[in-house]
Amino acid sequence: MKLLQRQIFLELSKLFGLTVSCLLGLILVGRMLQLRSLFLSQDIGFLHILELFFYLTPFFLLLLTPIATMLSVFLTYLRMSTDNELIALKASGVSLYRMLPAPALFCLMMTLFTFFISFWGLAWGMDMFKTKLYHFARTNSRFALQPGIFNKEFPGVTFYAHQVNNETGELKFAFVRDESIKDASVVIVAPEARIESTPELATIQITFRNGKIFRESGDELNVLRFGKYSIKLDLGRLLAGFTFEDKAKDMSFGRLSAIRGDPTLGPSLDERFQRKINTEYFKRLTMPLGCLVLGMFAIPIAYVFRGLKQQYGLLLAMGLFLVYYTMFSIGVSMGESGAISPSISLWAPNVLFVFVAGTGMYYANRERTPTVVQWLLHLRSPKEAEA
Image (cartoon, rainbow, N blue to C red; front, side, top):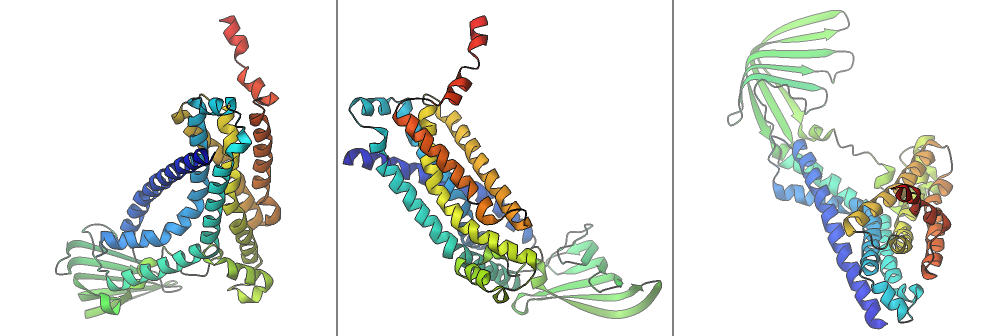
């Protein structure tokens, strides 16, 4: 039995490592493209993007660990069932319950690992990600334009130049529209301009020569000619797509718990924000338990669908996880909207899947199939009889 448990645990660990690596790899490609587009035309290297992705890893692992755990258990027991290893073990007097210690220990370890991420790792990763992102934008950025294309990287400011030399920073027929001023719109037009980027000071200076300034405020339009005019921009504004405000999903579990006890400790007393705090609190508790729940749920499912090819088994497992995650997402939405208490909506998927897992385990150990499943499997029998 020790050898059996060791082999099952080893196979589970290998499949888990492979699954997490593949899923993280897919996410890495997508996030690298997203981060690269954010730093397009800026001096941000590949290693810097990898460093940013590393700090986002806890956030992704919180989502990926439950599905990776489920897939590992499901594929392991599906293979054992397909290779008739389960039949051989049962013929030797080994019941399904005696095979549970290895997957139960594995799921428990993954649950504890996810709890660690949920309570501490997620907040640390998001804090470091925001800090590094802002640091890279301030110290490594250089502003560049593409000729004949409107640039809107700075919020509220539109740049355009007919001819651009990014090496020297020289612009021909430059145009800038600033809509960041309340109740006013400023347009600067000049035949010549020059861009000077100073990353160490986190500023960009654009100097226009022999141009005009058009300022529109209500029904009034003012025109001013100039020989030389300069504007300065903060490189930190390039990160307007990333908000640095205090969000519930970025907080540590300890801080969420403290704000639930005393709302004045949070950045806002708004009722909607408090609902988000409450929902996030229960989300951090219930999501790690999904590793244990889904892992145990996968065992009877693999038994019921024994003989299924692994590629189809993978699709089946993904589909079942999608059902779980959809229920979980609906619970989050209902909790944040106040339609139902998150203590109910977020615990419901785990309770339901625990019930299904327990029932399925009972039938699997007795080598029986639930009546509903038998009915579904025999739906096509009349058609086969007609054929």
